[in-house]
Amino acid sequence: MIGTIIYIIGIILGVKAVLEIIKEPISTTGKLIAALVVLLLSWVGIAIYYIFMRGNLTKWFK
Image 1: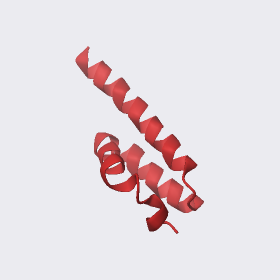
Image 2: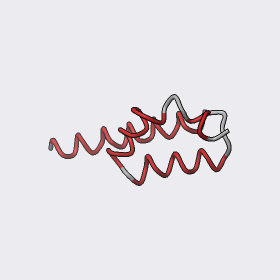
Image 3: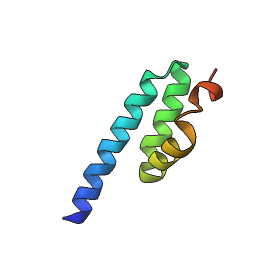
Image 4: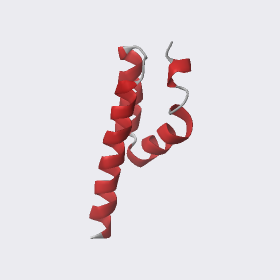
C-alpha cells in the first residue's frame, strides 16, 4: 500500500518536472536530455532536477 502511494507520487512529480522542462526557453535537444534524465533516473532524476537543474537549464542549454 505505501509502496503504491510512493510510486504514484513519483509519477506525479516526474510528470510535473517534465512539464516544467518543456516550458523552458531552451533548445529541443536540451529539453529532451533534461526530460530523459528525470524520467530514466526516477527518484534520483527528480531530486537532481529540483536541486541542480531547475534554475540552471537556460544557462546550460543556450
